[in-house]
Length: 321
Image 1: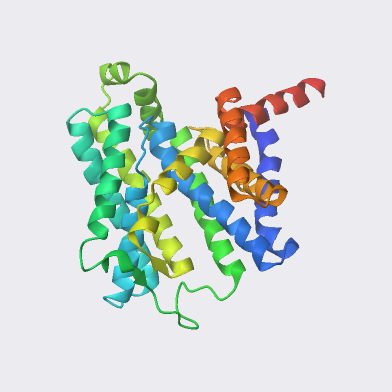
Image 2: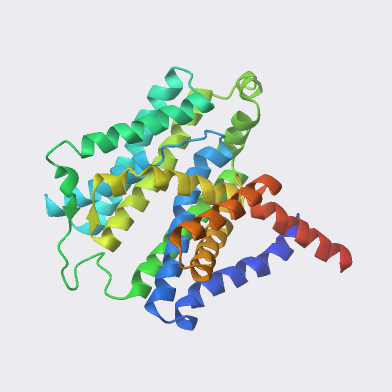
């Protein structure tokens, strides 16, 4: 264990240094915004990883939490004039509350596996229809946050949003590390691996699942608030888009579900792959086909994700050394 820690520490410090220095090396707004999107996507992937990776609760509707956080932030800032930083915290609370509600209703009736995945998808679609219909979300018109110079959480420079996304990603990694090395995380893994055995050990399955989905929802809600603060607009399609849910799931599966750094590796790989396919072809349709084929190949031949491949390479390097 001590030798593994000594081997990992330099890699972790190098990764942290690379993230911190990135905007100073790649100074164009395009490059900095790309880096911000990678870190932001990794954060959202980590929110899915908390429930889908560590606890095995495969959600297809994490956009329900993201969208709830996005709308909570927008309504509090625009309609009630609340300070954006406080609104962001309340968006996190709103996402967590939605996670608790969906978890309570789903797990109380024993939904799991594909049934749980479908019910989360149904909740996300229900919330999208509701947001498109009620007046306080301004329906299909969406909510536009006025641009004001110097206003809190309105970023005049690309590096400002980049470093906030980096801080969010760091917190998400620490949460994942906490799940990996704490009793709460061990209970979630036990539930994921064998729910009946976990129940026999005295683990309160219902409580742990609800707590897990509450934490996952709070993280996704924080992501929704950040998104609106960056782009200053939200509508039902943006908030509760199925593609957002798929993106969270995909970066985690590609990087390695149930691992600490899997969503980060997945977000970096998918972000780089997206840029590569767009640069190789001017046809959006063709690039998406190539993109999809490569992603399918990664998932098919690397069931443990990129993290498992990196682990094998590290073992080979130690063996040859």
